[in-house]
Amino acid sequence: MTGGGLLVAGTTSDAGKSVVTAGICRWLVRQGVKVAPFKAQNMSLNSFVTREGAEIGRAQAMQAQACRVEPTALMNPVLLKPGGEQSSQVVLLGKPVGELSARGYHGGRQQRLLGTVLDCLAELRGTYDAVICEGAGSPAEINLRRTDIVNMGIARNAGLPVLVVGDIDRGGVFASFFGTVALLSPEDQAHIAGFLVNKFRGDVSLLEPGLDMLHGLTGRRTYGVLPFRHGLGIDEEDGLRVSLRGTVRESNVSPPVGEDVLRVAVCAIPLMSNFTDVDALAAEPGVVVRFVDRPEELADADLVVVPGTRGTVRALDWLHERGLADALRSRA
Image (cartoon, rainbow, N blue to C red; front, side, top):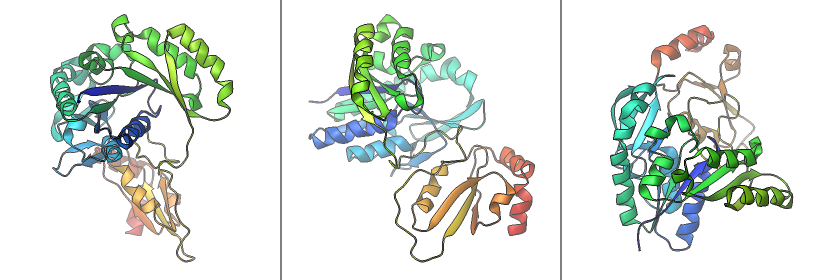
């Protein structure tokens, strides 16, 4: 039996959609279900290259690993790689096809990609027992609903039930759940199956009255409450809003081999490409990795890394403006 599917949406970016999708995938695999991940459209400067040489989002590669299958371009047919605040490179089925402004993309090109996206999803659903799809941002971005191909647009066209994930750690989760449903059209609302509370700390019993009220207000149940977990080691997706502090993913490492510690400073240049590559260094015993944006932070570094970027001229200007260019010259 093939063709089952689910869309994991979120009330916000970073609600935990990628992790929840991966978790559902791995749980299904353990039940003997043949499953694959899918995300119609991704925006990220961090990409994964498949065995066939196709570029897809790193989250879908991780989710394929959770499914115990080989990642393919079908799992992420559209990848947008930002080249600035207003434009992105469009990667279609793993290959770059051009550069588009945000207005040009949402003005028509995105909708034309819907057929390709649906074909990829249909092919996966014809091969696997279930396909667990991940949304992007929020399904209630009503300004973009007309051209949406990754949230309710894909749910409506593919007939998928939608699980809405909310991050309670950032607050306002009940309002986010209620508001998400309220802003959708009746046709979109019909696809919302229920909610999942993510990143909860504390006594779940204190949450239950609110969950009961939410059910009364929306007619939809909450399917689970997931605890906050540190050190999951999941790659960051969003390269535009990268924070200098805490960018390197948490990982459980063993102590240094000897007394020496290797200090690696990574220049946090604009539009960094694949900044998650340094996670491999951070996972080594005795290696300390930090992102820097001031020349004095290079003083005690044993190694300085200048990562690749989608905006070379902008990055060079930034290095000069911050005084890092002179510091790098003196080290060289």
